[in-house]
Amino acid sequence: MEIADFLGLVHPAIAVIFVFPLIGNIVNFAWQTRQRRLQISTEGKSKIPPIVGKEHKQLGDWLASSVVGLTLVGLAYAIGKNIVQKQLWSTASFQVIFILLMFAATIVSLVLLYRSNQKLWRGIFATLTGAGLVIIGCQDGVFRRTNEWYWSHYYIGITAALLMIFSVAIVQDIYQDKSHRWRLIHTVLNCVALLLFMGQGLTGTRDLLEIPLSWQEPYIYQCDYVNKTCPMPNTQEPK
Image (cartoon, rainbow, N blue to C red; front, side):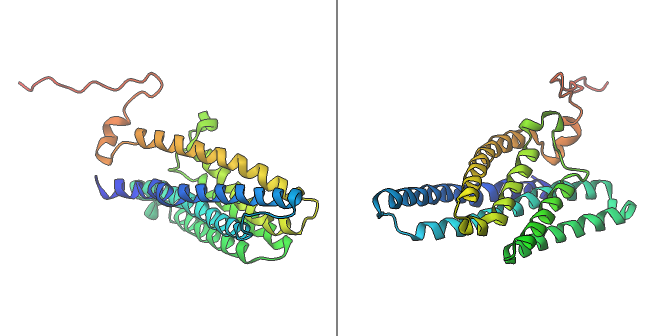
């Protein structure tokens, strides 16, 4: 494997080692938090310690930032590989600078989202963070599988990341809303996000099987993916 191939493993490695175990812990704390709330409402007390709610919130913040960061890592690899192969820093330097600025702006917007207390600023920075992900994802080099968007690792991942950003933006409203409307929205959307993460595990594994090593690309990319055929190698011995 060449350096480019090892760099391509950074994104899935982070997902397997850090993000997916984090999802399991968050689901566990979310379930305990809900059970504790139901037990208190019906029985007046619960054996589940109150710290589970705080742990759920803290891990949720970690997950949201990790998912956005992981998305940026995956996009950076694809876009960076395209820049190197096409030498865009010499032919389209403005485009390269724009991409770098978008990465920086997205990261700064996410940091400011966590630091914002007012609803207006949370909405602004959440919107900027989400817009940054979408704009970066539209750059050349990103394999989007648009013809199969419903089974695309890119589209599922972007949607999951946007849901995580939205969850961070509304977390303070959940505690302030006595009607529990925001809590219900949070629960429903994060159940959807959980399904999307499961889809990411499947589509990510599929894509790893489909992506060739660097030295294999010249031959593999000659294949006809529609008819599932590849050119036959020339086995005739030279005279």
